[in-house]
Amino acid sequence: MNNRFTKYTKSLLLSEFDYLLQTHKLNEFFSDDEISAYGSEKGYKSLAARYLIKKILINHAQNLLNYSDISILNESNGKPRLLLKKRYTETNVHISLSHTRKRVSVLVIIDDNEL
Image (cartoon, one colour):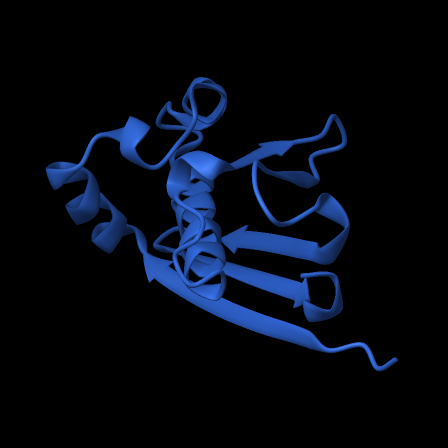
């Protein structure tokens, strides 16, 4: 049995995320826990990265998931932890996020054998 992984990388200018939030509310994309943890100005870049990860997962699942099905919170060591309400488990989706002053970038690797 061969392992097949799908890798996605995506980046977003924070100005584009600003524009998105001018027409949408945070709770359209994020859980209460995510908003509580990252909703301040300090966590703003983390929210933008989480938005990208969720968008990737929704597209990969061909819209069988929605934003409320996905939550991404940090473990005590700072590692992002992905929680999904439907088809996926934590073991088959690996995520990494990074940000600079003006941009956020994410890497999502999905083990397709477990879907």
